[in-house]
View 1: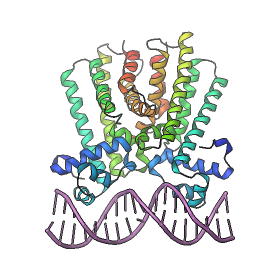
View 2 (view 1 turned 120 degrees about the vertical axis):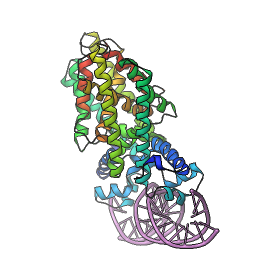
View 3 (view 1 turned 60 degrees about the horizontal axis):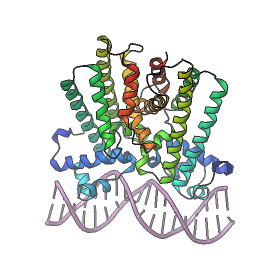
View 4 (view 1 turned 60 degrees about the vertical axis):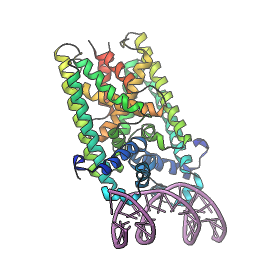
Length: 194
Length: 194
DNA sequence: GTCTATATTGTGATAGAC
DNA sequence: GTCTATCACAATATAGAC
């Protein structure tokens, strides 16, 4: 798989379109033709940029993970304290959800897991590992300075927080409810703050 | 849509097969032929029982919700206290997940939402409403008798618990991890128990 | 209830011209 | 990079015999 930073402008437009389709409909819910129509070119032109669907979606996940890491770094730059950082983290999910109740790319692909090419599953796994690791650090910091309870380890709280956010997008969509990940995150934080 | 209690034995075998396929691969990830092969009959015989895929999957969701309600009633029969009931509730999700990391039928269909027929979305919505309502009751009971914190309302805690469980299945699958919904539920309960 | 046969459309993917 | 044309196959669904 080529790294997304080496992609042409047209290839990036293809990735943009595919990203939205993955969030809306999942790996098996869209076709090359759907992508082509969104970009405004024909199907074989999509194949010119990405030989296979596995290739295309793995690139979508790869770039999504990179954008997420940038956002995480941005949060660290804007907020110093653990609770503010965890709240800003929830905002990342909320912003995605507010865009037509779109799911996290890797949440959707995680659900699709059983039917995906291995290259995609690897990217999804990496996304979750990175998020758990970052949350574990941030929660550990909050526990160390007394802002957060220590009724559970930082790692298990991080896991629960991530799961609650991912689940909130799925449940919010299923309920066709306006309540999204941010609301659930605030409930969670209320029970964990000292 | 016909009610599942009026289905023939062969139709029920079709529903059984389709249920597993939905959990493994989502609405768009399996075909009538996949169902036919699992049941051991031919594709047109599936259409004899369920004219459309929407019909088949709506029935899967309908029956799944009914089975879940039976399980909820079973929990109320076996356990009197709120914490024990909430733990047993998590076991329902864990048992599903332990079967080849299968997802909750309605969690999977909730994620697929954007690409589903309306009849299916209605069943999914009903599933989540019923679960939130039941959890709200059980958590309210725990708050009333002092077993659970009241740092948040019963309804918002119910929402967070349900989201954490659904999300744990998605994240657990994405991480290809053996840690499932039960582990996340115990973390959650540890922070909410008084 | 099950089958064979078929219609129709959509799918991922390729060949080769411009 | 994009296109037209096409392949091979898989999808949902129907007709009609047994």
